Image 1 (cartoon, helix red, strand yellow):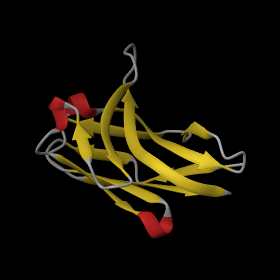
Image 2 (tube, rainbow, N blue to C red; image 1 turned 90 degrees about the vertical axis):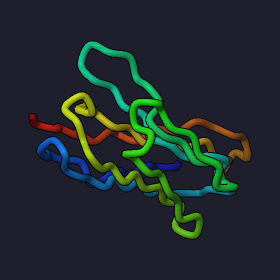
Image 3 (cartoon, rainbow, N blue to C red; image 1 turned 90 degrees about the horizontal axis):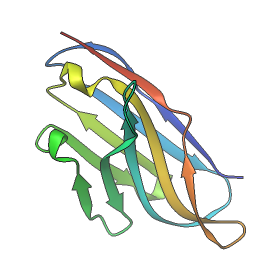
Amino acid sequence: QVQLVESGGGLVQAGGSLRLSCAASGIIFSINAMGWYRQAPGKQRELVARITSGGSTNYADSVKGRFTISRDNAKNTVYLQMNSLKPEDTAVYYCNAVLSDSTRFTRNYWGQGTQVTVSS
């Protein structure tokens, strides 16, 4: 079984920074892409940022210039550096990985979520 373990959430004042980490463990043959999604109360889950195995990235318009996604392929870990945080960034942040596991099929995995709260 593959697990995604997230860390780094918390409470921060507006304008502050947080860094999220997500490590994938288990039998993994390859990882196509890793990313972060978020879900605020009463809203749908939305893509925040995504990075492919080749290093290509894409970001939600609302976080461009403030958030940076990066990846350590050797550690199967993805990071999200969040700067200039705003109250509207408050949400549960979920790590996502599209990877080939022990079945050799490509599957979509999710972390358990980490709360990010930005106070005004």
